[in-house]
Image (cartoon, rainbow, N blue to C red; front, side, top):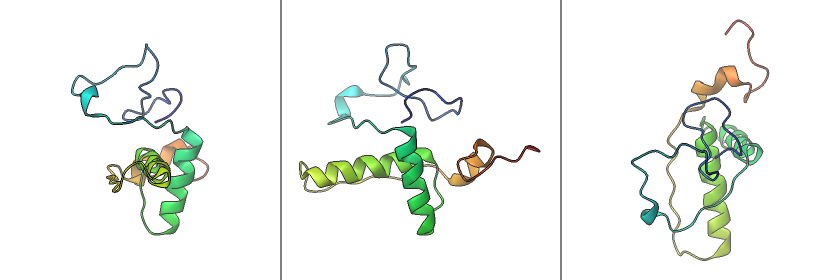
Length: 102
């Protein structure tokens, strides 16, 4: 997740005391947290887009974290779900310059 809240719902960091943590989050189910910067998440989005998967920054962050965990060999199997689509972020500039008409 991003370092700071970028103003887009669904992209909220959960590490600082002032961050809004969803009530449905059960911290007991989390084995490990992996810090992922906004830049790392966007880089992974662009890599996935080049392979035909048009995903948003949350999915880019999931991929980055999954690859980091997989490379550490701590877990025999690593699974992630790409839960957002890239088309929602067209006005943010993540795919290039934002359209001033939007």
